[in-house]
Length: 413
Ligand code: NAD
Image 1: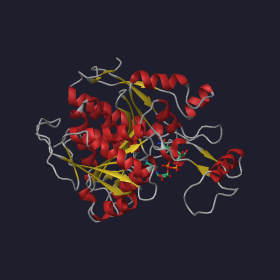
Image 2: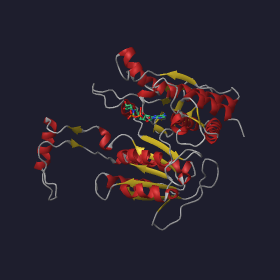
Image 3: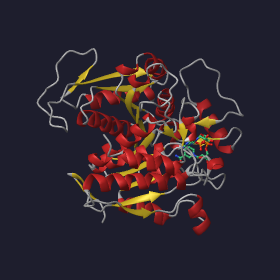
Image 4: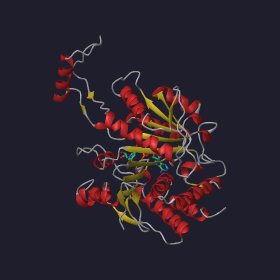
């Protein structure tokens, strides 16, 4: 049955249709293992009263082979109709005018919030001494910034036209004016897109009982894009009575409750310059909680944070439009073609994206079972090759074997 959405939020039937893009390369391996783990957790949590009805959606190489299109319109329609979906990685077609299938899906469905929770799972080898101190959720704006795709190659007619225009208007600086053979990229940052991502991050922080939201920007240099992002973000923060802005007087009102019914703590909002933030996350990771930032900063920060907890292979992600009730959860790694069909790679990123998806559906019990099983499997050192080679005394298991291990351990105490 279809999930529906209205002003009260998502309405999830007992057997919801969930769109599934298996993905290219290692996608089929991680998604088949991941779906088996999700199905087992749902069955165990709800004794068979709930089950996911997977709806296969064609995209990527499989779609191209069958239809001659990388992302058929029918697939986008199915994603919209199901409202919630999960995907494995997709090959970025070379040539043919498509930038990336992921970017296309995000743009077509206007999935403006890229949400990346990053935390350490006990036992995962990490490059820092205290990886457990990092536990953040990054909200990355997904639709604009230098990813908007407004760019022209050096020497092209369009680049030359823009250069001529720029040279004709006073920039107010003493910089040398642009000459030919200069590539041009445009960085749009709008009030509307900034405000909706910041609103989403603050609402999430309040619902989850988080303590702090940090706005990350490079406003000291790019005043009218990154600086405007910071200013608009603070305007949104001021809309929330529970918010206290760092360095400003005034206590927040404590009358509301979080989603567990506990009195809501005041939520602190502050900002950091992007380069300082990279240092802060390494040196004082436990001072950060929810992070909201523009597209490029968010791209860099999410991967840096994931690496810090040893988790590039297990970092989950989601792309969400909260106003339309649309969400696509995704493994964050690529298609790793050399490992395709070997049943070898780590399915953790897909599985943890599945955990995010179950939480989004309100199926918390099933989500918790998976986290428990995964944590135990890692603690037992029965892991895929990427983790096994970094852990003393580990036993390497296959992709599907890791899934079976998680299922075996999810109900254990
Ligand atoms: P990649 O993530 O596919 O692979 C880089 C290396 O990381 C692999 O060789 C492998 O050693 C390791 N790796 C990746 N996933 C792993 C896993 N689950 N378990 C264990 N090891 C893993 O990156 P790439 O080689 O830069 O990209 C290959 C293709 O994937 C390109 O077409 C690219 O556009 C696409 N891509 C897609 C997505 C997506 O769909 N979300 C993201 C990134 C890249």
